[in-house]
Image (cartoon, rainbow, N blue to C red):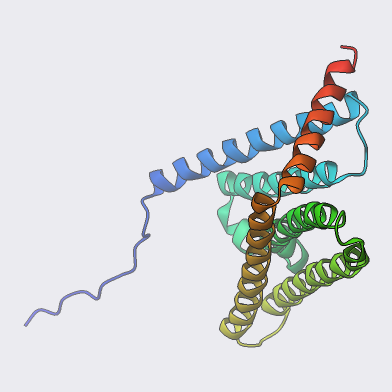
Length: 218
């Protein structure tokens, strides 16, 4: 009786599809990097405020797209190297972009929360005293997110602990913080949509930005 050969594992995606996706993602992240870089250059060109929500947001997007472009470019030459990086490069290319996404979400929360506070402060000035604690809360959450991802990445690469447990802890904390920030952002946007003063404030910010651009000499 002939014995059948044991089944072997095969890649879930054909190699040509993997290469095509790698090219597509690399081009996409490169174009995004160039676009964000151009936006930052325009901020300097038209002498807008150097330190603002806009510049910090663009800087986070620029760093994120640069790291993603660098990661996907590894797969063109040696994908084995990309999967066997040292602890710090591994955290830099795989974990830091996720942290930057959370920082960006936190920044959006702070900006729209500030709009809500400014709109409500006209009738309740005592609300302005809660702005600083709000900043501190999001700063603490961002530091917590950064520390958790850094520690988990180092443990995966340098210790003999259970990798599955470490990844589970990291994913649980990350997803929980993302959901909390997403809910907070949704609440802020809902309040802004229901407040005419908040809409007026946002429209005035956009209008002043456009007027500033039109007054700048070419």
